[in-house]
Length: 276
Image (tube, rainbow, N blue to C red):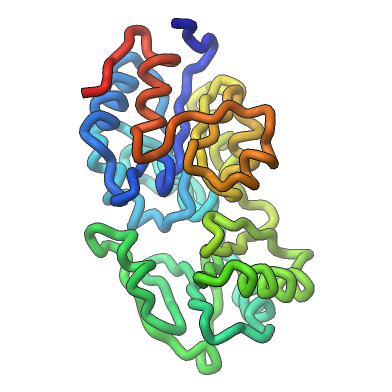
């Protein structure tokens, strides 16, 4: 079976990618990442999740991992040292939220140690198997400090999020850009922040380029990362629109089928590891 040449780095998103539908990393996937480490590949996890939440997950891999979190607004070393951080200015966030927001939409500000929200959303909480990153209920009309790592909106009705996206950008397009990590999740970051830029910071530190990376993702917050990498790989469970947006990229098996690990085993590692 033909192996990928010149790949020295493996980059993976978490939700819908490295994590299975139960938001866990399978034992098979852990074994493959252990072998990646043994064969001296650099491993980077790049996620929209907050670092406190994501660290609890990547610890279960049992290997050194660079963590790019909040879509690139934070970078942590394998030793959990913060290497880069960027926060949105309070006035930028306040202005972005100064629009009509449908009452069905959950509003979240990612802070350093808590996430502030206008209502407790059990579905969002369910993404954390162990609650490391706690919610704090706030009244945005009374909040004084709007400074945040990123702005996050959740709603089961995608069209309501599309309308909100247009309204926020009409107010704040000079400062912010957006991504739908899922059809039900809309995120806003500073224009200078995305996963690809953060990954390049990590790779420069380690003496690699992004063209030496294979990257796996399933959401629109992965577009820049997938496009810039030497080998961008789209999960089989990704939205059809993402596959249409990046038609030249290869599609791998779904996250329910250990798609990331199986591709690594067959195309990247020096010897094949069959799924058990």
